[in-house]
View 1 (cartoon, rainbow, N blue to C red):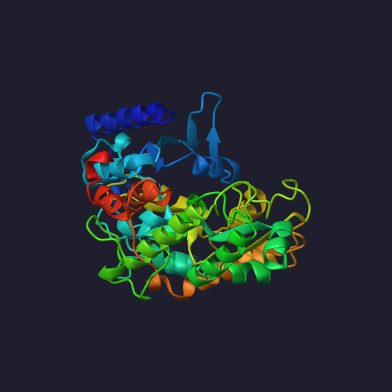
View 2: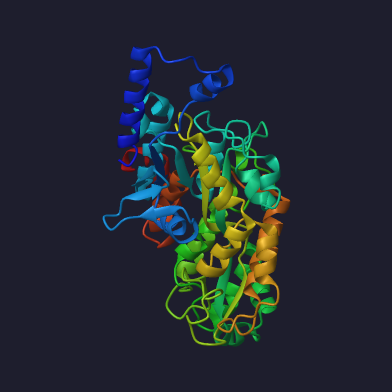
Length: 425
């Protein structure tokens, strides 16, 4: 490691001073010398390599050598990347975080990334540090962030425990020509009205069945909206998915998708689809000009996201704070990420600047960035109305219900499968 030589030299000098009885150090300097040093290894845990790539592209002092060894200055950066499938990443964090401070310094978790569904759980955990009180990031640094993102990363006592790098407001894309055939108009307003809520979806499904058209390529496209429908408009226990309770709103969604499947409304050449991962809203080279449109989905939700938190027991608090400040609060850096990588980053002014005057060629001149911004602002208006959820639990629900949606088993059997799914995952 790069620090080894310097540490050995410092130890030798200290020994020499002790043995020779060198002169005393002034009190002020002694206090400074006693301050804990930053660790030699910074460990960052992620579900994929996205954050590592953003660090490589946008943080000037982050470097990787030809062997893939990473450094920030003289601090080695260790990446731990585990798949979120079947709860592997979350289960690993849950095992490691409570004992993090007991590990050797180089083995401790310093920073870890989270998806939107996981943020609330870890914000409420005693295993994560307060970004202001513990790390010293000024509250003013977060002032330009979207209120929704801030609320999701804040615990019940008002302590900010996680900060968003980026998040994707839940939107759908659609084929303008197909929408014209189905709805009589290919304009975004007509498409949005057709899928604005469950009642509208049911009405649109009648039209699609009459014209023998597929509405969506699969039930999975609509899955993110399951956990975004609050049912009664509150986030109380009756709307919270648990190991022994399925909210009525989620049952309604499941029945709707089973009905769509029965009527043949899932298939190729569908009218609506999820926004492509490569995001033509930003990449104008991707897709045929004017063929697509973009609109709101049937509920306000986030389809993808990256929040970052700092683990209790970190031995790199100053560097961890600097990374969080730079990658989630620095307006210039986040504008660069939004413009260069297409992510919807977490500063209001930055996304306003990115959206100003934008016109997407692929989306027929539509200002898709302005639509994302408008949706993100509305998410911020009522974060308390969103159903609290656990990603692993909702994925268990989805997987348990799939055979019911496809007409292979009854809802009661699928329900029993969900309630008894613990061993399956």
